[in-house]
Image (cartoon, rainbow, N blue to C red; front, side):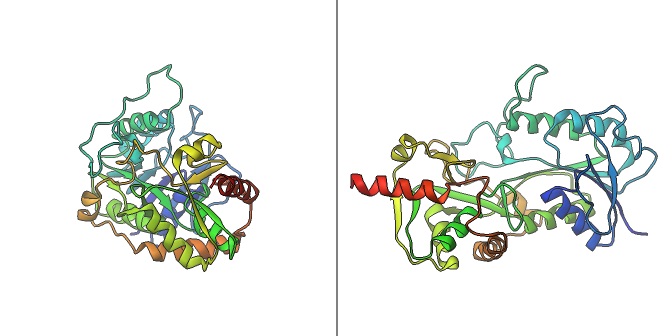
Length: 328
């Protein structure tokens, strides 16, 4: 008999990939969503609003071999646990390395202190919400694994962070590209396919630990060099100091008018966490160059010059380059 798997939020990017991987393994998969998105091929879709009291009425009475939850809303996770928690011998909750209180210590592992959970009237905070949701997820199954990914990257990434760099180098061609200056800057990512493989394999064997699913930590300059080489960029690469970028309104990490992956100097531990427990538990890490090649192919298909959720628009970048050259 095939496994029965429930993926709560199985129509988004990562949730969909997890559902598809379970289907490929031969499981009978059900996914939930609020509507507006199709289910992965081969999965049953239950349209529901997780904020409603009867959100799981259509699922009550079914036994599952695995439940996967990717939500960042603690109340949604807690509600699912209260209604479905006795219906599965194992569950997986997908959290985040953002849950850690200290981002200044390179090499920190799963034993590091977490941020405080959200209080009832506290404003929404992603890290604190994930900690609160982790606690609620303890009731999702008889055994529960908590997986804390680093920055998830790969084809289809809706955040546009990692893909910004191979796409920008490809779009620039022989023209200049602006990058952040700093020999100590680091980048640490996890390929979505490596993460999904681990989620499914650990769920299938009933793993009940807590792991930081992270790849190797690399100098950011090295990551950008790999992206540039893959894209075939031959133009000039101009480096700008952090204080200059901040004065000119360039943001760290993500979002509009940012340089993605660029982190403040006071959080060197965020992109250099230990992945020893992940690897010991069977987590794979493919070569970064392989990930970049796949992302670049996806970016070319979607359009390397398109407007993005993260990064500088090309006109913004060229204006910054002109300003930087003018003062040198």
